[in-house]
Image (cartoon, rainbow, N blue to C red; front, top):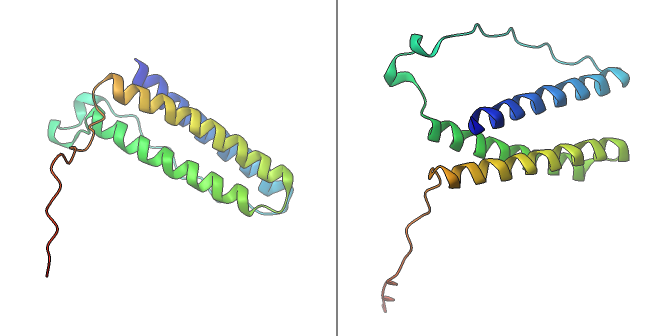
Length: 128
């Protein structure tokens, strides 16, 4: 259930960002890009078993996408010449960071975060 709540929060945040940025573009005389058509709803049973993504795969993808969003918000914020727009991206940055923490906690709790193996024995240096 926690996974579904995080996914819903990510979707809600994305919709909010689209709405706020479309308003900002319209206020400045820029036509927002057209929205793609909504995809039809599909039942889980209609998707073949081999074609479904597993929960750990989805969690890894949203963790990576959220990290990319944090970097993009930070970059946009640092390049702004208007304080109001920089503050808007700072808000997005903060929200994405909070969501990233929730995703990390969920991945750890469910055992989906696999740490890399430790290198216990260091290789001998080669003298040439």
